[in-house]
Amino acid sequence: MIWIGDVLVSHGDGGVYSERMLGKARVWDPFRSKLSALYHKGTGVEITKETRVLYLGAANGTTVSHVADYADVVYSVEFAPRPMQDLLEVARRRKNIVPIMADATRPEQYAPLVEMVDLIYQDVAQPDQATIAIRNSVFLRTGGHLILMLKTRSVDVRKEPDVVFQETVDALTSAGFVVQESIWLTPYHQDHAAIVCTKPEM
Amino acid sequence: MRSYWFGDVVDGQCTPSSGDAPAKAERVRSIRTSMDPFVPLTWETAVACGACRDRADYIARLREVCFAAADHDIRQQYSGKDAELLQMVRTLDEMDTVINLLTERAVEWFQLRHPTFTRKYRKTPAHILVKNIREKSRGALSFVAGEIERLSSTRTELAKAVSGRANDVMPNTSALIGGLVAARLMSNAGGLEDLSRMPASAIQVLGARTALFAHLRTKSPSPKHGIIFQHRRVHNAPRDCRGKVARVLAGKLAIAARIDHYRGVADPEFLESAQARIDLAGSVTGNVTDKTIENLAEKATDDVTGKENES
Image (cartoon, rainbow over all chains, first blue to last red; front, side, top):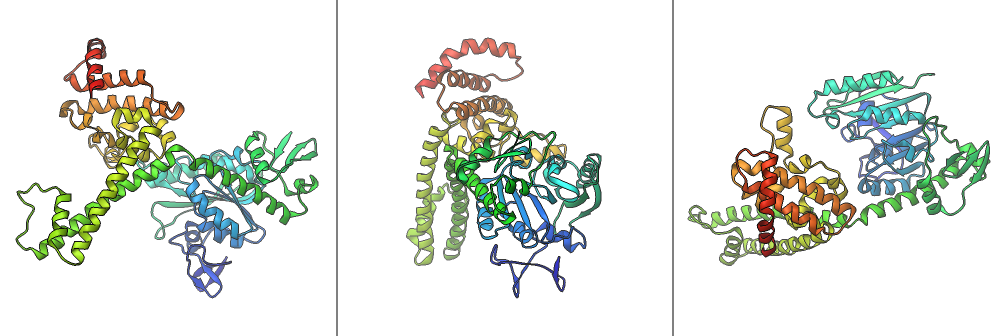
């Protein structure tokens, strides 16, 4: 990842969402993007020009644009039509984004489009987030990484965030993932946790 | 056989798919992929298939297909009859908020100029008050009051349009609860399809989110009604059977929404029996079993439907 002092940046055409620029570098704000927050916490997975990424819950393409600056290709899955309109515009100007309008809970819908990837990044507001990750892990090569941004409030508002967090970690572990790191994203984001896993050799 | 966006692979033999990007997108939509066991595609297969030259070409062509698919899907989702109604009713509710805010502010401003002015012991409706402010003031305040009046008349027009469109898009739901409230329910659910998939108990408390979650978190009582309270049959019902009316009404609304979504036309037979059942819930108080309700229902149906037809 590219740092200028303690500011995380990415190299690419600016003006996607009126982000701040440092010279020609685009500032990647940890308060806006959970993935940036994860890197600011001093962890995360290195994305390089060889990395193929499957991005679940691409939304308006804000974080996607930064990931695309680093990665080889980003398969961006988004379900809702409104954010998809924005994502398409971002994808039109970044040739390594493949926008896919589909439901991340049903990977069979976009299986004919997606190749094996090195990294799955998941940021969806759904109750069954671990299940979504497990279903999509068929696209992940062995040794590849999964970064799951857990919105504990989307899972179950009645449960304590810690409980939801632990349950998700357990579900991923029992599905064969090796949890490398699990970390809360405070102070950047409230009630959000990041879980970084690897897919081991079978 | 394995089907991918660029073609079909059978025993290592690949047949590329024909047609332009929209045609390929259409084909992808029809592919049923088995996930067990699942073999992800590789771009090398596509090259071997003759679908593209190299990796860059592969991505470029794949993007064309994905763009075509997304364009098609977005268009389809927006073409639903409920899509525009949703925006209309949300605009309406936001206009209400804005009009109320501005009116309050204008009154405070007016009070400053007329220190003796007070709203206590008066029943001046807000729109008359705004009219008075416009007439009795000069300069900017008068303009603002005039603007609020114009906004209000736009709001009235919009409300009519919402009602009319709701009657068209969701005839059964609108017949039970009125176009405006029906549209609000639909907006809160997120669309007609979402509303039609909701259980009656969820429809009953749509719009009572805060109360519902307060109930789930703590020991506070559950909400009896949400948006459907706006309907006269709920808010005019005596306190002790309001919950019951809301429950019965929500039950019928759930059915109505399903008829609206899947059939799209009014069902007079259903509406008649539903109206009778809802009115009955409001007229019977105290503890009654289903049996007594049924008995009463048979007796009541005739005169109740008669009443409905008059009004």
